[in-house]
Length: 171
Image (cartoon, rainbow, N blue to C red; front, top):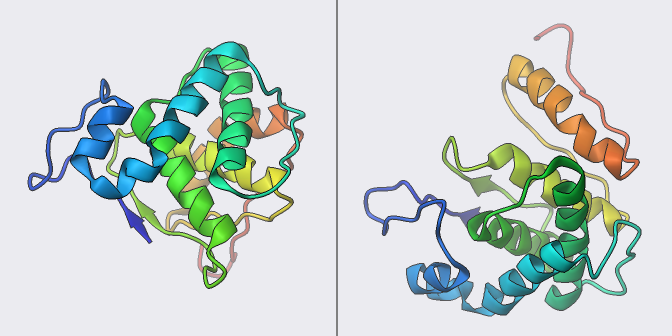
């Protein structure tokens, strides 16, 4: 499990201008991700890895390249760039999912307005590039439909098929 709540009053004030260095100062567990966040930001800017990049393994350096390739394509096509805190969440969750043999997935808690939909979308695309399947679970069918409609443009960019599963009896 990964729990990052930048709006919690007990935490330091983490804003949209947060740097990768700030994230390490905020939580020392983030230290191993610092250089990888910087790499993703660099890959996003320079386009060193394109959307057809295929991962060679699941170490954090390789996850960073895949994440950078996804972020680059989204930035080029939609003019949207992930913030360092969003990249941190993608890297930490992808690392957990791909490298923790005991893991059956990952759960993240991120406050409203921090970019959950984009984080989940980029994370999902990264995981699919490792030939894994993704299930995103929510308790609200209306939000699921809305987010699916809004996010499918990103999945389409990478030729990823998506859908919504629900039970007619309860929804």
